[in-house]
Length: 430
Ligand code: UGA
Image (cartoon, rainbow, N blue to C red; front, side):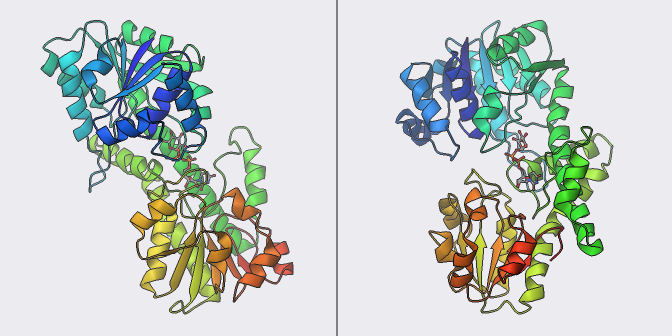
């Protein structure tokens, strides 16, 4: 199948690379010439395990081309995938500027029989607007539109795409359904065909539900701390009931990233605009926000005056296997530490470049050992495997004071106590 993917951000690039690796002919289009030139040279602008290798394989096999020219991209294509960004406006609504610009441009080259699919997460009703924008500039309506939202996770993007469990095709006609079926044929996921509005809403509902699971287990963890229960064991008890499920029940410092914070906010707004005031999702957001500051309160229990103290941060990315720091708990926590005049030194296996940009006042270490050297306390904010395998004796020798506040429950409280640490984590006995 000849496919044109517009936008080479996270979703667009992964989608283009994965579908080309399955034998489709894919042209990825982006207006950013520098980015396209780097991609042509095999340079991937994001950190995503396996992406570079797969991309180079597809370009070598001539299944994947990069261009800034939309006309060239759409020349042979029967299906167009829109994957441009929809950043949040100040009021939490999704900014559709890029989507509109792309839709108007598509209209210049759209041919009868083409299907235009939105992969970006867009407010309910956007696909209908896309239809209007495209037809406004093309002067005809002989094309189909569809919503096929993306469910991949950063850090796991290739597997999530090539082995996707389900796909939702929000379509207006059979032409769009058939085009999407042909595109997904090599993957063979469970397919649910719906209206466009259902597909658009499903993406927000799925992310809001996952965020709810996280805030729920974090609230349970907070109760565990007061009643002397252990959230890790408790989550297992809950999760083994298949109606609940074991995933997304990991208590910690709360969720971050480019999706949950933005999508929960947008969902609240979308519902309010439709005259329904969501009650659960705003609470999910509140719990998530407070969870970051609970970790700071734990630090203050052992270190009441932070001014002049050397605090080591282990983990800056919002989760492991990514360098993404968007809405990461580390951002709020480090700002709070700096505002209390502590001297903060941070280490992350891959997010240092992002950190230089987002946290210019923070000293960055090039190893965990360098970060914790002479530290009064260590705060663990990302569950990187590298931190889990830290040699505790080495850690103790390097630190000035043995305070470890673990926002990801990487260590066992009992073992930490035996090793002589002051150790606090989330939802477990201290
Ligand atoms: C999320 C969804 O999982 C994807 O299905 C969706 O496609 C994507 O958003 C999107 O909308 O594009 P992602 O943001 O990449 O994916 O990351 P997740 O793996 O879901 O993790 C999100 C946050 O939740 C991380 O900060 C993680 O540390 C936290 N988390 C996750 C927990 O605190 N506990 C858990 O049990 C699971």
